[in-house]
Length: 135
Image 1: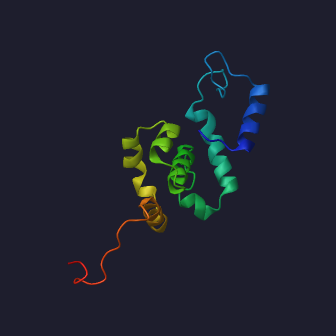
Image 2 (image 1 turned 120 degrees about the vertical axis):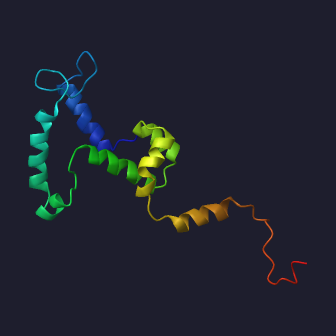
C-alpha cells in the first residue's frame, strides 16, 4: 500500500527504537500484547479535543481511529485509483469495497467522459447531422 515518505521515516525511527516483538507486532500494549481500546481511546479523545474545534468534534470528525482508514480509502477512489487496486491495499474484495465505498465517490463525470472519448477509436463514424443523411 502506498505510504507517504514522512510516515515511512517515522515508522523506521520507531522500529529502530522499538523493534517488532516475536509475533511481528510493531505497536503493543503496556505488557507487549494487543493494544486495547482502554489504552488508546483516552489519548485519542484528548488529541481530538486539542486538535479540533468544538464544531468539528460535534460533527464527528475523526470520532474513532477507523475513520482515518475510511477517509484514506475514499480519497484513493476519488483520486481515480482503480477499485481492484484500492481493494487490495485496503484488504477488501472489490465487491465489499464497492458496497461500502461507492457512495463516497463523488464528481468525476467530466473526467470519465474524457477517458471514454480517449478510448474510442479516432475513426469511429460521427452521427449524421440530419435524418436524411442517415438513409
